[in-house]
Image 1 (spheres, rainbow, N blue to C red):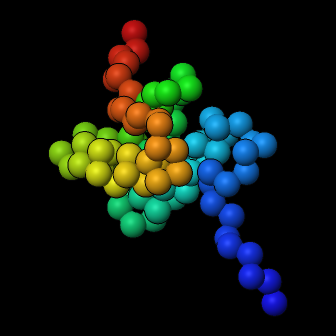
Image 2 (tube, helix red, strand yellow):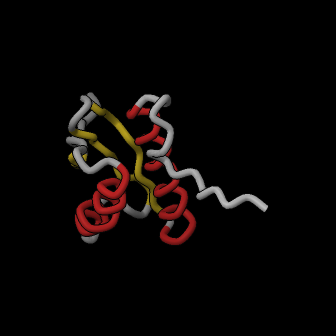
Length: 94
C-alpha cells in the first residue's frame, strides 16, 4: 500500500511553470464546463501575470469576475502564490 500523496499541478519542478499552470486551469475549466456550462482558458503568461479568457456560459456572465478573482485566482494561488490572474482583454475581429 502506497502512502504517497497525490500529485498536484505544481508538484513537479521539472515541468515548466506555464505548462503546470495551463494544466491546473484546464482542470478548473473541466469543472466549470461540467457544472456550469462555461469554460476558462489560459491565453497568455509572462512569468508573473496569467491572462485567462472565459467561454460558454461564463462569457458575459455578471458573476464571472467573482469566479475569476474568488475561485480561479484563489485556487491558483494555492499552487503558484506569486502568479497574478487577470481576465484577458477582449479583442474584436475585423
